Structure formats: C-alpha cells, structure tokens
Image (cartoon, rainbow, N blue to C red; front, side, top):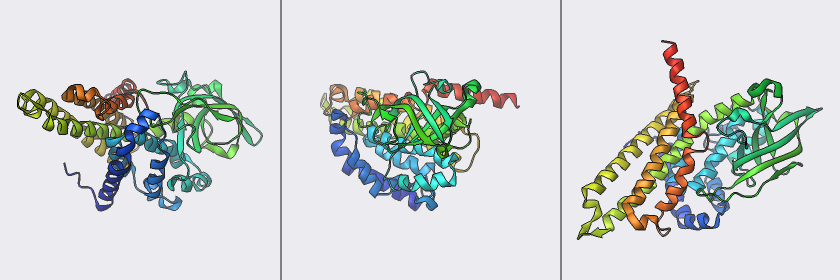
Length: 384
C-alpha cells in the first residue's frame, strides 16, 4: 500500500532496506549461531546517521519523529530481529533523556547518542519487577552531592555494550511507586558492573545481561526529571517506544511472508508449485492481510504520537499487541508453508519464528498490553 511517504521518509526506508539486504542479511545466520553482538553493523548505522533520526537538530540529530524511526526499525527487522532490537533499544534508553532530561543533560549525552558514538540501554526490569514494574527494588540514596545506587537489573538489552544507561531506582521506599526516580549512569562508573551474557532462544545477536550496582556513586545532577518521577518517566518512555516493537513485528512478519512466498513458488509437488494449492493460497492470503493491517495500525499510531497527543497508552498498546501477535502467527505459518525446509537452519524462517516470540514478551507482555487497553476503555466509558 502507498502510505504517502515524503521524500525524506522514502530515503530513510530505502537506505535502511539497502543496509539490511547488503550488510545484515549475509551475516545474520552467523550472528545468531555465535550469539555475537553486531558491532560492525552498529558502526555502519552510525555512519549512515540512523541513530540521530529522532533526536533534535540542536543536539546533533535530524529532528524527525517516531514514525521515521519505525520505518528504519521495520526494514532492519525484516532481515534480522536481533540487529533491530539492538538499534531499537538504543531509542528506548534515550527517551527518558529526550522527554525529561535537563538542557545540561541533553547537551552532555545526546550528541554522542545521535552520532552513534555511544549506545544506550534502559534499565527497568528486575527479578521482582517484570510485568509489575512498580516492584522495583534497586535503591538510590542521596549522600551529599551524590546518589548511591544498589541493586540488580535483569534482562537488559544492550547491557555491557552500551555506554549510557537510564535506570529506575527507588529513592523513597515509603511512597511505593511514587518513590521511584530515574537516573543516568555511565559505563565505567565504580560499583557498576554486568552479569553474564544470557544465552537466548532468539534475538541472539542482541546482548542481554544484568546490571549490577554495588555502592555505585553518581552525581546528583544525573537525576532525570524530579525525584519521585521515575515510574511516570518509565511509563511515558514505554508509551513512546511500543510502536517500535510493533514495527519489529511488522518487519519480521514481512520477512517471513516474503521467504515463504518465494519458496512456495519454487517448490514443486504433484507436478505444480505448491503456491497453486488453495490451502497454501489461503494461508498466504491471511498472512499478507494481517501483516498489512498491522503495518497500517503501527504507522497510524506512530503518527498520532508524533502529532503531540498526550495520552497514548491505549493506542501504543494496541499497536504493540496486534503487530506482535501477527508476527508470531505469520512466522509460524511461514514455517508451515515451507514444511520440512522451514524447520531447517538453511532457511531463515526458523530463526524468524524463534526471534518473533520475544516481541510478545518484552516492553510489557501482550497480556499486560490488554490490561492497559481494557483500563483505558473503562475510563472512556465512565466519562460518557
């Protein structure tokens, strides 16, 4: 479908597709097999200015919105979800600074982020704070001109590779969720270390580790926003980033669909290509329809957020939950269309199926997204 992209948006999509096909595709299987972080690909994306897409021009970026970011994420995801997760998580970690950082913080951190010189990670999840994000137990205690941080963050994307971390920690236990605050912590700060690299089912090119804080001291100026705003900052950050996860769903679904169509045209059974069989055609028809519907929803919500809409929790949750459910279904169906070949590592769809599962889990499980949507609907009906 024609989504009436302007020249700049078309350029972003075309360049992202070119890099995906020419630089990422040839090594995606190797990155997956070796559980290897895509350092060279990140350098290519930095040289191509992708990290500056949604950062204001005054800080070295291009001043575009989340919609332009989704275009790039979708194209990278079409080829390798592990690489796209590394790229998308960088924006996730940047949003707290973009949305709530002081001018001094933005001047200090955003230029290096926009240039791709420094990667970013977002630290919210803990052993007891997953779906229940209010269960954060990592603490930050003010001592003079410094905050002292203690605790452990779990399953953090880009951990160990990123130079800048935006984290949520409790500054006042008595206030519960209202006692959480957000901070910037830089790699190399004494008392800040990393756990082992996790061995995952999918997105294996992406680095996932623990963040470990043991009397880690940071300047009090590293507080993002006001003390006690941490939970709000985390939720607003996720509202902004979930269209990126939706774009990942669209991308991996499109990649799996394309691979299955190519195979179905080439695979001969009973003297004809299997795409000639109505059963296969119906599967492909559903895959194509759902992928396009997911794309339309993700694009629409991304533009809605970019328009300056205030309360976007329901819409961003819808984009995330629908597109990622589609991704899981389409990748499973792609394996089915390709039969035994689809189950083999020689073909890309088995990797796509493994990768797609995480989309229904990270940045808020799809069950939690439905809770968010349901709560918003209750509020809307109560006002009528």
